[in-house]
Length: 380
Image (cartoon, rainbow, N blue to C red; front, side):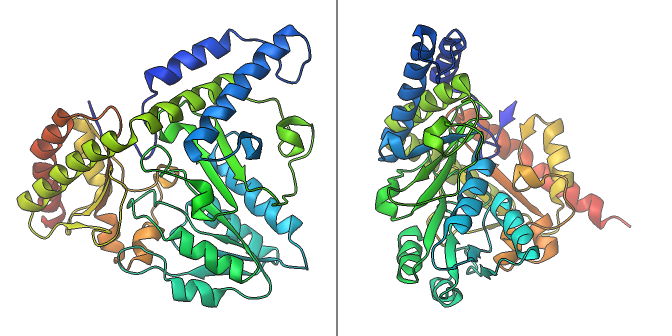
């Protein structure tokens, strides 16, 4: 099997698997004061320290969650509920992850003022429009660091400066960036940031929210865990695996980034050469080294995915959380692609377990699959 869907979930790293197994043998509750509880607390503290070190933050500012969706929900709802001076407004970019956009739509139905900011044809947020979207009512701005479909890296520092000038906070979705490119959260000048374990080789069901010192959020009530900010007994094995995975990813970041960029570019150039008219989305912007969003005009993405699956290739038509939707990708639509172009697009994403053989297999199979799908669609 050739796995080209690492942006959905990447295989668990050996370091993470070992950490999970060790944590499974640590059965105490981290909140208990007896010896078993102290052992569990030590595992939790080590996981927190590992994640914090990779993100250049202090461990006390990190809140463990079940994943990116919970982190984003806690950040958005918590920031709006705790906003000073009657601020209630929310500003989001048009290419945010559905966990942010769907929440924004829900909030707007209940009276929250929401502004959606456009992006340019490469998928980069329009900073002038972002600044114009803010007003005295704005409490929070959401701007992701790297897009999950195209890999396009956003100007978060500039967006944060605009938000702060307007008296608002900035939430950065760093889910796809963590473990793939250097992520220094304080240097980004964000106030809140979300990461999740399965994107960099950790287990599912573990994530984290960074809360910058001095930022107030309304908590998830029900217990004292996570310094009173997120109630519920922590997922010790998952969090131990997340810490080990992010530490391992950070240790090899430079070399691994160059390796993945080389594989991605070989894949892109091979597809462009074999299939004239093919287009790489976001090619004019900075991108993650592992992500390739490619449009095959005249093809159909869902049909292509089925054809590739039969040939042992796992890929995606976009975000995994929207798989099966008949609606064209909101990211590609925001970049100006037509509905037909968006439906003719695949996301091919590499990761730590990817090898030369995966690219070679993909280049042997994908061009023929595209031609067959085009012929089938063109047949009377």
